[in-house]
Amino acid sequence: MLTRPASDEFAPYYAGYIALVPDGDIRHQLRRQFLDTLALLSVVPDSKAETGYEPGKWSLKEVVGHLCDAERVFAYRMLHIARGDETPLPSFEQDDWIPTSRANSRTMASLLLEFAAIRAATVQLVDSLDDAAWVRRGTSSGKMISARALAYISAGHEIHHVRIIRERYLA
Image (tube, rainbow, N blue to C red; front, top):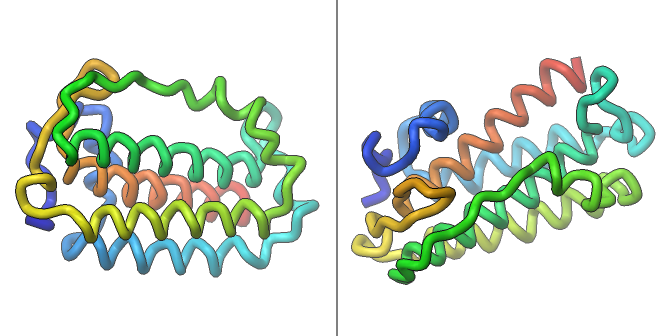
């Protein structure tokens, strides 16, 4: 059941993230892409990571902090739905979370270690799901979504931000 989710398993908003994920085993994708992201970002000095690519844009540290926050949210949603909890889950407003994240007061190394731990937990969760859990559906942000779609959203969300990092922060 580790196949790409059907379009009725997620809100249209997430289609772009899911489309970014290459075909193949999502577990492998989640493991491999993170190693590439770590390699890319581990050489960025803290001084370069504390400003946005233009005024009003998040710093690179804030982007990594956002990757951590979003990965946690997506994984919690996946767990919640996979376990059959039918309680609707709320939205989260990423822009409201950034100012209180204190990402710029941290080192890139600490942010990357945090992301590594969160991604490792996500991979373990995905590995633990059986076929029934994988396709179970629930409600998040007022929309129906499957556990499988959330795994793909996690991968696609990272791909999306790494593209922006390459094009705008490290170009």
